[in-house]
Length: 204
Length: 223
Image (cartoon, rainbow over all chains, first blue to last red; front, top):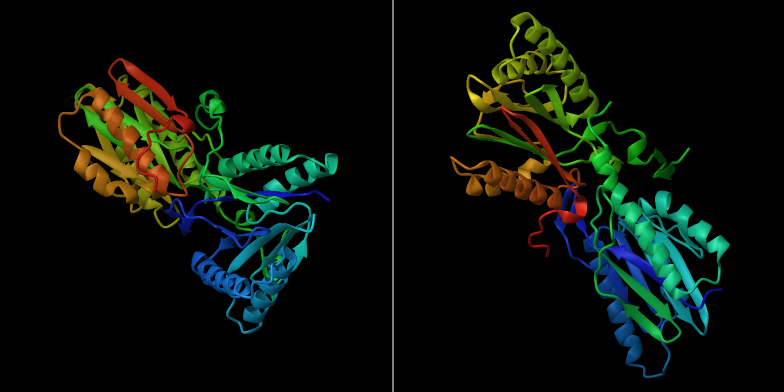
């Protein structure tokens, strides 16, 4: 099991095909051990964000040096999402929950239906079709990859997604969780190549 | 097959059933001595980018081009047919075709078959009678000459910008800059437009084609 998690999220909020908000963050640092990322409805994510932030605050007030572990946050989130689903009023999101607790890393995905599972590699949206095979292949070949190798892998996935997902921007954040804590990097872009464009003329 | 159930109804990913569309941002501007035309390079099937380096600037004759938006299939078919007609027309006339003529042929098709087509076309070129000309042939099948024309889904985001930046009597280079900046703005907001910018300048002497790679586009406020 790897000791840390590394993952990334695009920064765009779309209204249909309009890239309406171009620098919103879809990452939430829950505590020193856990980060969550959301795709789907941004308003619903903000609602969940406020719930979690209040829970973390109330927990800190107990001053017992315990905080929610990644798997606890995941479990809670799954229950909330499934509850809303059964009430036919879902929170229209897919969440990724990641973190490190007592040396063990955790990575899980839960969606608007309450479908929840854990895996060494995860991706939502178009990433599920295009990035997941790349992630799985790299992980199978090198399950003990370093943080830097993981970042490079994520960047190459993001490049493909920027090339092929019409609802993406070349702008993203990467969060890394290690036993030492959480770091969320500054928003960045990937290098892209458009050289093949010069070789194309017409459509025949 | 790739699918999942939501409330008992099977849901397939968008790109399995969506039509190929040149979502698009296209533009053409007249100047004294010719025209500058431009387009983005994205073709989508739903939200999947089927082609990120598409060439939407299609030659109809040596000095007349069209910018295609709407259904990729429809616009390619129409362009091929119009090219064929004009080729015969030029042979019979023993002279280069007028831009107005090309626009007129486009209009015939786009109007008569308008219930079956999704094609928004801008016809632009140079002829010796009226110099540089731009004609818009939108979905309805009407045909109208304009000093500059914008089209495609991305154009909706730049009507204000273009209206504020356009001036009569712009030079060749000013027109290229105008097209480049307008399209870059459209591409940065419209999900159905993107990739690189293709420009073409059509004058009496011929056609010059330019490619601006996706990582060298003009940049504006980015939030």
